[in-house]
Length: 424
Image (cartoon, rainbow, N blue to C red):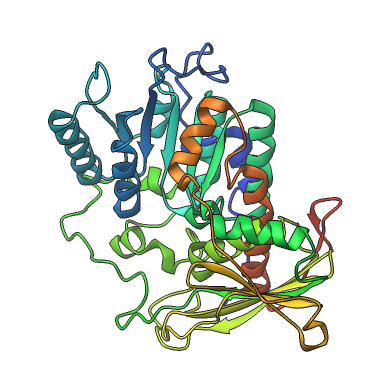
């Protein structure tokens, strides 16, 4: 399992304070009039975007934005030459076959995200890099005056999420964490019902994410032609520890602690993200975790992982997951007077025996609601908070990150929600 290092890889704090240039030894070449500027949407009401990280997930997310009539994708960035060239071709093919909603100047391709952020014609960016880069790029994008859609997890470490939230607050950027289910209305209906007292005092909830990957979760295919000649390995490592070039780590990064929290950051962020909408986001006060590598020894992160999160409101969330068996826990929120489940797309409330007769069974259907990407685009125009904003993401990130810390250090982690710091 291995204990976590006494300090996060930055001197992770120094890395984030100084940005990517601190580690790479390269100065930012960004005009002062752009860095930190308050960006405005183009006069035509188009949102001009760039995508940073166009591997599998990044390309899929980018294609979603391409189909928005009010988005123009004008830049892609990736340290892998093949990834960025393929993405650039996808964008150009799309706009050659579909009207882009106004004059379009083509799609630029960058190896270094700093060059993309230096462009003063870009309003917003999609960040879909490996987890260990989320914090630094998010911070730099906000400082550059860009609104941000950052794939989950918000960050790899909770301290990074705190820094991102502080920068978003200060710069006034519209920041959306890519937990798509947080825009499903069923969770907002659940939140309303809980606030109205439909289940009484909330006691404990369960969620999780189970899959059965015969060959081992995250064992994606390797590009045998990938090499340091067409991949900027040092830039990809970024704030992570220096290592020799390794295709396995590049293409299957979720298996390694340096770049990912495994199940916790990849999957639990989804589960706890929408639970946070239903319950209301809180900082945890205590987190414990267990599990192990039970089926797939070719990795550092566990293939079976469970976390128990206690909150100051006297409420506990239990998250359970295995990548070797798909029979997971149903999502349930238990109150003193009734229990809330999610069945057939509805919120279902069944009263406890002691309250039957006083409280009828309730079934509530979700109402139409903009999907996650549209919600973010709408909020860029209105300057309102999106569904999974930086504050919500920060609170979820603390619980997720401390679960990883508890597992790796084999101890219960206490957190002070008032001081926003780990106890001891």
